[in-house]
Image 1 (spheres, rainbow, N blue to C red):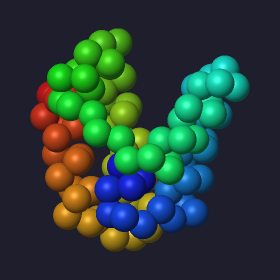
Image 2 (image 1 turned 120 degrees about the vertical axis):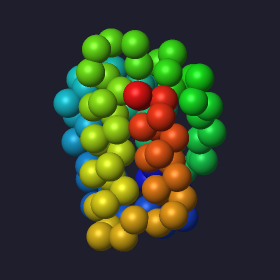
Image 3 (image 1 turned 90 degrees about the vertical axis):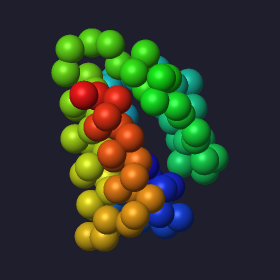
Length: 91
């Protein structure tokens, strides 16, 4: 989501950082997540669906992605498309 519009804002990375902090990840997992900011990620709807099987996980991810998309006060068409894909998967 952070890379969807081609612009990575400080507000977006701040939200991403808060998410990582709350997930209480291992240092190597945080390093991997940091690479996600630099390298575009392509995740299929099937992969998203399989990754978030816990109750409420997909809804939480949709909410976080929405906050990231809106962090720079502009909802880019690519961000909107990604949110719609996620919403379909979460539904």
